[in-house]
Amino acid sequence: MRAETLSAQQHSTRTTTHCQSGPTQYLLLSGGFAAPRKEDREMTETASLRLRSASVLGVLGEYDHEIEFQDGSNFVIVYGPNGIGKTKLLEIIDALLRMNFAMLSGKPFSTARLEFEDGSALSAAVSRIHGPAPAEERDSDFEGSLKSMREHGQVTIRLERPDGSHIDWTWRGEDQNNFELYLQRETTWIPINGGAWQDQTDGEIADLDELSMRFGWRDVRTNRKQNRPPADFVAFADRLTTHLIETQRLKIEEYMDRSPRSRNSPRNRRGQTTIVDYASKMRELLSKALAENSRVTQQLDRTFPSRVLSRDDASEVLDEVGIREKYESQNRFRSRLADIALIGLEPELALPERTLTIWEVSMLDLYLADADNKLQSFENLLEKIEALEEIINARLLRKHFAVNAHDGLVVTHTSDGRPISLDSLSSGEQHEIILMFDLLFNVEAGSLVMIDEPEISLHVSWQVDFIADVERIASLADFQFIVATHSPQIINTWWSRAKQLGPHNEEFFGPVARDAL
Image 1 (cartoon, helix red, strand yellow):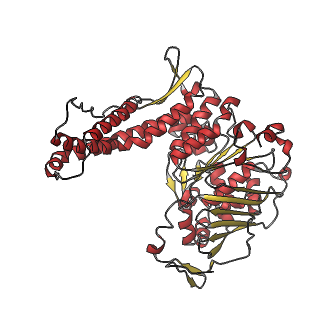
Image 2: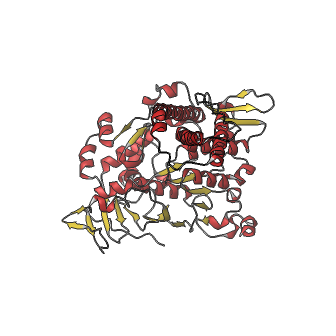
Image 3: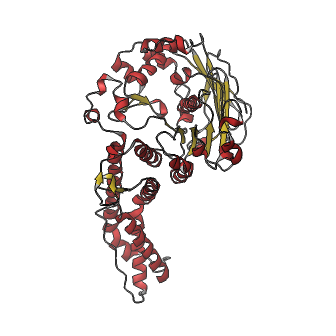
């Protein structure tokens, strides 16, 4: 599969309809696009899209990279020597999925194409006004970066629909380009899905127009109004979620210190690291689950008597065997919850050993159904917590990792139970906890996760199990993932899912790769 080359000379939005099938029809308008009725496309345009393949040509001016998810597979591994653009490949895919055109225009590639399982595709072509200066000739300061960005020109995007029709749009705007680069390099603001921006110091979300006013950048708002993508691109972007995990993931303050305005932020004043921040987030997740449990409990308990009295005797209920099995299942679930020290859960009801009467079975059936609803807020959360604990404890030596409602994340000595400060863990231990937590609790369902060089700070024995651990997490959190690595231990037995980038020299990993194949 090759990325389709798009013309970068188009100056207006246009729609080309190749076919009309079923109830979905597209209306051609002069210079614009009218979407079909909402009810005709509601089902197909709300679900997240799964990536089938990606092709990026001209990476670093000379490499063509193509990857494909095999049938039934939810991950791909890419590997290759230094300097062939593995990281750039991930960044380009991420920028295109986010429709971050300013960042996309600054990446070293010519064309890119993403194909999805529903038959849709998204392509991009960069047209450069002046070719980028060689790396050794570029200025290292920010003004030099702006100069380099001004030379990048424009990006032409094509959205192809499953029915074969497509819409093209060209992004241009030097002021916006420079301003977005400024925000990402000199402030704590980062782009998120849907064209919004988020401040990493406090989580505030704002659009580019508001930020341009705050920072005093002229002409950005005017150019933005003239350079906004068509509604179809915006709707398509809402179905794309991506999560790029870069090589540096330990210290929040290293990111925050880029901007003078962030140095007085509460988080920066206390020098909080990512792992401590995640411990706080875990406490919040458990607190929210408890609050939801309390809300549902009050609602169900308030109506329980009336529902018992109004229940039809002929209602379908479990028999006594089913009642006792469900009762034991809920007790096991409560025991698992007790391991993370959740307080406030109502005590279990003890069942008599004698045969239950008909009215007892009927009432207990309703009671246990209510209990299921009350515990529902913990089900997915508990499964993820247990996965996190199992994965991390398989890595730690003479330490025990646990999650509880009071501390969030806690590590203790196995010998005497003494607590260990999260900040004092080794970089490898912190990397593992942060990465696995990130995948389990920060990734939206349906996302494409890209992990760059996960082997950093990881012992070889930890690397061997990495893909299996992430695949387990992906099944829980429902995401696809791409891993870029230099490590044969990361690939381990997954060579059938691995794609070599760059020159195809079998000696890159030597006999390790040959033997695995």
